[in-house]
Length: 407
Image (cartoon, rainbow, N blue to C red):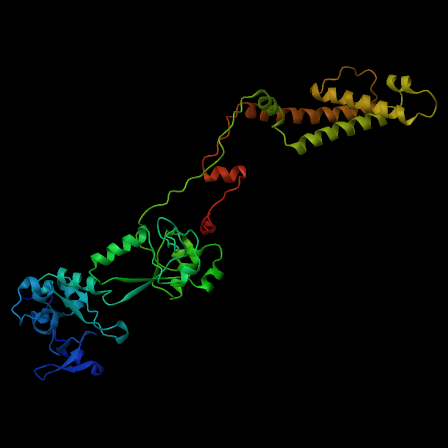
């Protein structure tokens, strides 16, 4: 009984529009060839009324030999008819399918429905799934050997780890976990699934020299094979080339780092006093102390140290070197004492101006140093446990070539 919201339609005119697929039925009627299996049906097939159209015309549903219902496909006894998809979608809740008898390039949109005839479409859908690969051979690329997933043996029975001449010899059979998995699929499909294993192309390997697996995916994208089998990582680059099946297993990837050492030792704790400033900053501080000492020598035209060293009217270079060293040590102590000078009675006016500027510089440096030192002394031991932390400390990350763009 057809349902009013999704009525059967007349599709005979559409079927007659393909003269190149015309055929003649045993009773002399003109008809159309629906598929490559020589299924010839009349132009009234599926039109106007709900009926067991397949039971009448499909050779698989032949009951002339007094076979029971269990001996023919279940879809044979299901009623259906062609319908108008727009009307059914708008006025009913019936399930409608586009027929696969005609390619979309033919500009033919012919739809059918089982539910509008009070029947079920499950058996027909199962038939389509089972016959999708019927009689076809899938060409599968094997990128490389990977025991125990996929491998070949040499003449002595030894498992090979690297491809050799046998890699290109189809008479040498593959073994491994994936082969057993695919063989089980072939058994379940009852012969509908046939797989032929082959090798990757040289062009693909040239394009992707860092990964044979990406090269195999490239071959699929180029149409050289139907699929590739092996332990593939699903990466963004490969997804742009082709699609992947549901993963059979997950390859767990971890970040390996050196075990953190003990940072509570005396040398390590002592060295923290130098960490608030970079090495360049310490060098600049020492340079400024030295320049200040030299300027102090320049400004000192008469003083107790100079009079003690001076022996003649012309001062020797050694005297200046001794005076410069004394001044460097004096300014170093002045710096380390945070700008507190032990003696200011012998300083001249230019030297006092110099010491005023130097003391202001010390004030800035000491303030920054004390603030940073407090943070470095209380800083916990560094632990690198994430990719972000690796990037922050500038460590090197080693990974598979296939993950180069991902990382």
